Amino acid sequence: MIPLNKFIELQAQMPAFRRGLPPLVARALSHYGTIEVPGEADNPEILRWVRTMEDFYRARHALTGAANDLYRADDLAKYQHDAQEWCALFTGWCLFQEGYELPKYIRWSWAYATWFEPVLGKPQPGDIGVTWRGKKEDQIGHAFIICDQIMPSFVEGIGGNQSDAVNIKTIRVDQRLLGFRRPTEKWRRAA
Image 1 (cartoon, rainbow, N blue to C red):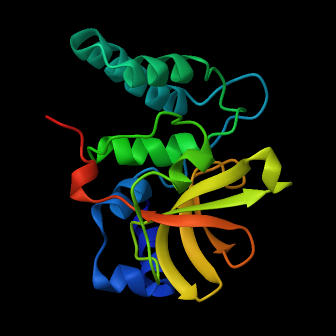
Image 2: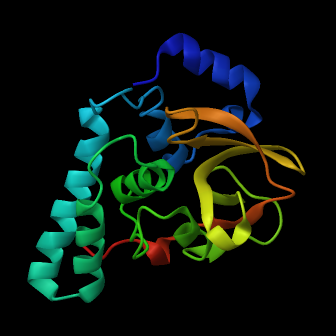
């Protein structure tokens, strides 16, 4: 849970907090401060996110036979250590907890650039942002949840694996943006 003093500090910094928190942002903030453990050890909380989603997709595959669910479970099973990239995993975990269907490649940030509804215009708090880094053709990037747009070229995004932790960073989006996407009701998992 986010400490009260940090929550007050965040309220003062971002107008989105004064307008009320979208559920996805509130969910992400509930993990604020989760850190990657240095060295050989792992943060059991991060590994719990992975195993919970893996178990869900294996069980759903057993019930429905949906090939994408088996692929999701097998891909999640490959995640063994918090030293592996986990920004997309964190974004997926928050979306999963809010009841959204996830892309086939849950652990790959670029998958979120084509999943959900495209955002035309200004992103809103609760939208998903994806940027690329390195060489674009390498398809390495960063997925995060929008907290607020502070200028046309910058957003405040909460994400995992941002300096090895869940935190809020100012992210420049005018040069390496793959896209903003909006999770809507049509993307909710069937009950």
